[in-house]
Length: 451
Image (tube, rainbow, N blue to C red; front, top):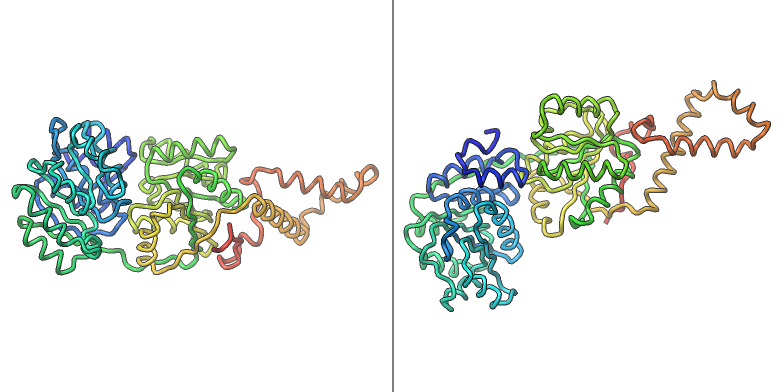
């Protein structure tokens, strides 16, 4: 499976997928989309962050009629945050089919939800309690529901929603398609599937083995999306000219970030599946030759890359698949060289981070984004170290005569300061690595403070 064309999707869905920048299906999408497109009921064991929203959202957006004024699809989620997140994702997937998606959860004004329901919606994403409130008020018509999805089912049951879920399921049309997505499949979920589902296909997606890359120093920053570009600049400025790969989840983000970094003066190129083969080869040659110091890439485009000089990997967004995380950080610190993996994420993504930690068998260190003062101190320290390295090698010998001649008109300290200034202003990509930059990971300078 290399792309979404094999699913036989409509032009509207293909356009939405392209707009969102998806390059190829994740494992859960490759397995589940065909089953749901066939109308099968499914029970899916899948971890958070594996792309399961699109796995049920794509078939849902394909099958729902935009002309219906009452919901034809219901998604139940355990929390307000997940409800909003799923609703936003489904809205983007169904945009070109002109489907209306309504999130329903406690804490939001009931009148706002009532007004939206009166205007007509096709997909409702709801927490169980608030959906039951509407059912009892008779403010929602569920008689036309064709698809029901239970997202994070085990979490929903752990939070005490079993009776609510059963009440909702028992009041929906019997002739419907049901998908149940859960990180684990305990006995209660098995019983629920037997009682309310039609011969469901049970799919247990294989988990990655506990993997780790010992030479990689793994850190993360909690940074809102709107502040992420500035934070990235701080990280790059703290890396002392190390060759860096920045991973993004979509082609669009690769293009936007490449343009933004280029505008800030970085030597940067973008790499994704939308480029021609010749263009991709040109980008890679520039990166290998050191003419580019930063490569912004999607997971698909970066597969199979063999670039042993990379020292730093930045996850600009959290990868959908934990295996993708392992693949990303494996690009840095190869062949005994030091490596650093930095991950940006929002506070609400911490649970997904913990899953990645459990799978990789490591604990990532939380750090604060480097301050301007810390960056200046790091630059000064790096400059001093390069100076001491040069003194130790004796490479300065041929220039001694020039300095001695200039001493007739200038102070020695002024000449030395001017030389340092000249080195400091050199483009980072042209600087030779210091001894510190070729030591094992334990000796590598940190970017930021430990929390």
